[in-house]
Image (cartoon, rainbow, N blue to C red; front, side, top):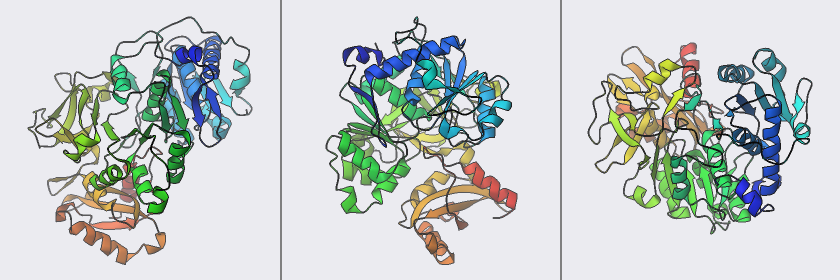
Length: 511
């Protein structure tokens, strides 16, 4: 059986997950009891298989329990970013048609307004306290049985795209449903690939609402491993947790690598990381220099993958492969990659175009048949809108999202290339590169940077950064100007929300 239930029966007192900040331990036995009580409670509320709920919480001890209760009850569940504003939360609740919102006291601000604007929402269930109009989840489930509900097909997530290039859309898997306790063949492949088992101790460094942390944590638990959940990433804290809990597996985004690499070397090398067998990273392209430095530090345990919330494919690469294919995100484990131009002509090796997947998992965008149609080629392959090229051996290299590409004077410029370069400048903490309208060339390259020391901002540093680019990039790729900002709009999972920056500049009419 691929579910924590198998290990609740076998080793009920073993830790299923640990809250790193508080040290709270949830055993497999306790997790199974709470999952079953939650599933019974959802049935009591009138929820039937394929009904929809949303979950809006910070990383806490009940998050994964609620998700698995929904899964056990055969429900569709959407995890919502705890950083969204009320209007954005309302959009997801209404678009998904959710009847129940599970939240926490930490998310209480704006809930009254949210409820009044969501007519289909019947219940707001709250953790760690309660406010008027909400139901206390913990006390409500206490009276329900700890034994399982009658079995049904396993529930599924319907996660919303990050919305970095527009309003988010719910992603609905259209692959065949599976009975409770079973899983898709593609998941079995990934669990075997990473060797998740009862000896796994997995460090989750990111918010659980996001696709990768959520799904990986559930896979580890279902394979009998232990998950260590950070409430919020910090570089020294993450390294100390690897040592403290003898972490074997972990997951990161490139910005986390950069922050750890910029720690003083004596701090970086003061931790015992010998238990660490596999460091998985994804979510954004990793600059070559950053990955080289991580492999020198941690050894050849860095495992990169490329996938999306849509789950249409899985492309991955080991450290050993990457060292002979630097910059690649790997080859397909699920599906087959094709590179097409705007007329759906397949491009030869080395030429960049839109990445389409043949034969992978299938999906649709909820309530948006037009967007679903846009994601398909005429022969049925699908895309999530990223661009890249294949080499002669079938290794994929990402260039950027199609929506981010800058066209200046008829030439395509990929912001990711410029960002990868500037990220290595020692004075830069974070940055974004995007296109702005230009009357002569159509668009021009703009860079906005966040500094380690904001006091250094000014014309002199701008000139230094411009020279840094011109020494290493063709002139047409270099920013025409560089601005300084206190904090970039980046999601907690490391994705830049470039549209917010670009819209602000266009609205202000500034270059």
